[in-house]
Length: 345
Image 1 (cartoon, helix red, strand yellow):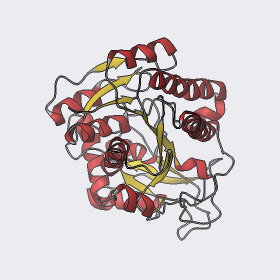
Image 2 (cartoon, rainbow, N blue to C red):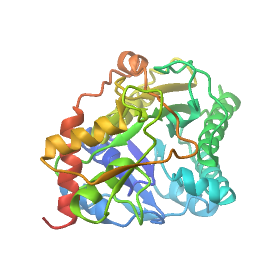
Image 3 (cartoon, one colour):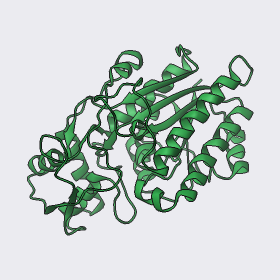
Image 4 (cartoon, helix red, strand yellow):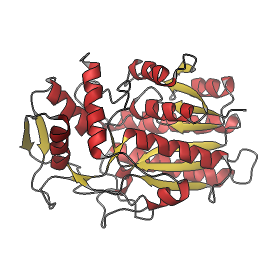
């Protein structure tokens, strides 16, 4: 019998790609989203890619405890992957209460509903932001978590702690919860089909949508924040990971949970490439691979930006049997194909 995975926030950028990979790996998937930060574009794309018109979709606000409980009561959910959260760093600084209320409240309700309905496997979508400005790069899972530089980052740290505490409290009981924390670095790109990708509302918060929107003419100019960092070219360095590679890591993590292979109640994995790429290098790579000239300028540094961070992904490579495979060039070509698809070109 096929196992069923609930993907909360499943109509968004990461959730839609994870849904594709789960279905292609043989899982049944229930997609739930309150649609506050997306529309059905990517969900419709998921159906086309998978050839499945029957994927259950529930419009659910996980901040509503009764709605979360009803969802777990309706479906035989074996595992839940929790994406449903607000994610804009700058907005979180301006609206901290909104971020704490949404990001913590939704996860607490998911955990409570999972426990009440016999769902023992919880995968939490965490972030490299928990490492703050690291003392040493690359960061491993043993690198210390630093004070969060934003309310968004603080909610990721708090949710990690909530899951750990829940795992500890339920160990050995009939309602035992197992947890996996996946700490993403910088997901970019789009599905090779160009049917799903990143679809920001309003001004993008992430670099690559700003690049592609500038290239296609939606934005007049791309701003690169800071060119005086202590890095080889003066711009920040990041670990940019292809969205499909990232999605495949979730399949490996879910399989580890379902197959009873976990050696700890709560496990942590860095999901990145292990290769630092600067902002300027990424812009230049986009121009080269797509044969385009971008209008960009250097702007003052942004508050809260970390100078350089990239992953040591060796634990995920070894234990999950997962490794990032797509090149930056292929990823940026896919991102551009998605932008053109949106524009009908």
